[in-house]
Image (cartoon, rainbow, N blue to C red):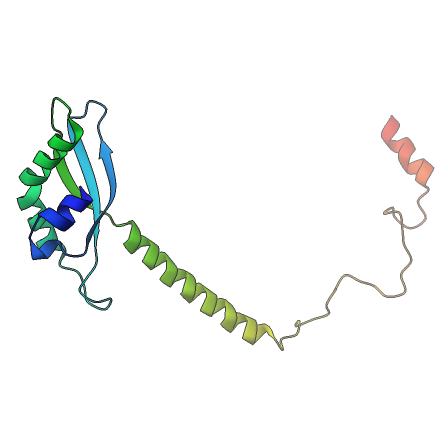
Length: 148
């Protein structure tokens, strides 16, 4: 399919079209072809409507090529769907870049920061370790209360 679009269909609107995936139903009656489009330059937006129209126009020729190439009894109908995965991946990369920049800004702000109070407000200097019981309570007496 990709080579037929590239070499046999002479529509200039199909320049820069790449077939990224093809899904065929189990009964081979329908095929969905996913495609991406590159613009003339990296900064130019591709002509998505022109490409969709050119693929629609070339569907009959492409279906004939599929039928001849596969040798199946029924040639599947072709549906073309623009693959948005590269666009979504680009958007995710932009979001990650913004997040990294925000993290770097936060790290810069945090660099010289100090806690508002003591680093450990619950530490009491000079206090001895206790067993968690009230002062003067006997460990054996406390455990006897729970046995009853």
